[in-house]
Image (cartoon, rainbow, N blue to C red; front, side, top):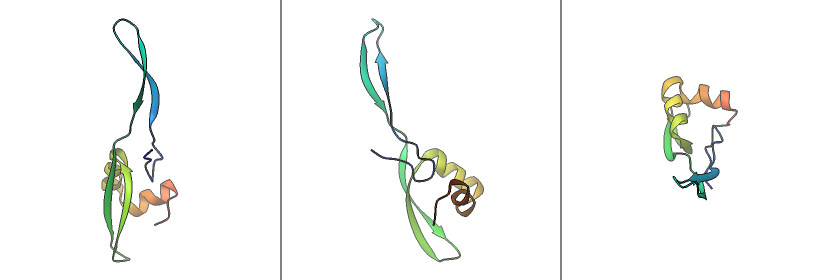
Length: 74
């Protein structure tokens, strides 16, 4: 299944419990989005599959800084 390239977030499995306490299996999927970013110094686009949280962090601190923190090579 889908995983975030920076945070490694993936699907979680668990039980959905009804009012009568019946349990059925369910999967919680992360909010994964394909997004392109422009690298200014290399003058090229890079494409990642990221979680919404990772996109918000990149908007806040920048792609280079977040990639260095996450250990991802651009």
